[in-house]
Image 1: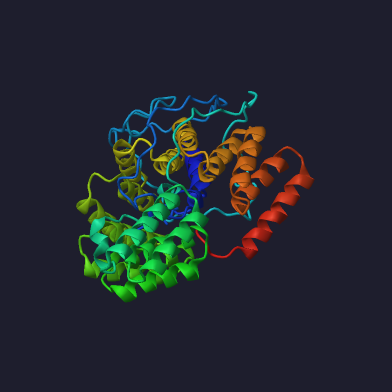
Image 2: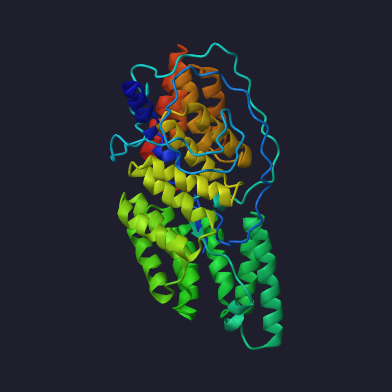
Length: 444
């Protein structure tokens, strides 16, 4: 049993890049960016309307005969998520991590394991159709949280003329609505119009910078945040978002410096603590990240996002029991938080609770059908279950959502190879290698 459990662990530790920090913009909008993702998402406006928490219809999956871990006492009780078996309580936990060293996904090992750890399934795969739900804001699914929250208090920098106040603010609010609808080009025009009317009006610079980040024009984004700071060097939202721009390009140390400046100016700024924690986690400085997440939670204990972020740091540092506690808490606070289900699924898989993990991937996909991460994670499950058609279906969907997801190409290559389709396997392997070699360090 211990040998088999370790083989589960080696597989699902390999999923590290598909969890919270494979993402890319949650806490940034003031962002996790996984990084989010954001990330990252979005916590940017902490009161962004959330999707319905109505559970999606349960998908049909192959029956896996691998043994499940049955440690004792429960870690914590979690909200019901209707998996099979129920995931209403956290996994029984006498689980003790075998190692605090976490291995990243290793694309060069296309077999993932020389001996499959699951018994192949003979049941026919039928693609699931998730129950329709209102879509989440995409920045909610990344680890960093940008800050686009603005109120009338932000208007202190408006020019004193009544005409300017009215027209600049009107253009700005139109742009803000377009931004939240992901109509980025229209939002860009409206924010630029507001700036041309009143060059001292700070919020349009901040939010135009966020639009540039969404369009992956990071130099322009940083220039806009600098423009806002030239008007008011104490504008912490611009400092936070400038840090997010750096984090999105993998410049985590630069991001940490911006977040620290924001925290120095406002020690109660929860989002900057969370984002700095995400940056530390991306540098594998987990003790520093955990300290920042503790501070963020202390400032806003009812916010779901920092619990998910702290859970990821626990997971990456080898403490799966504490990770599950935090994921359960995050989901209890926001049952529509797709990324938390994805991350909890990885933790369940790591300790051998395969069906619980699969159920969480299903829920994550249903809540956010546009995210490739849970699709790739579920496809790995199917590869090791011997259900290669299902794995190919999931990875093909993931590649359609993110054509530069070389990890999805590697998993599909493995599935093709298992089926004896060596030419297709070689093509996917070569495509994945090319993307990985040319990929700029942009966190998606």
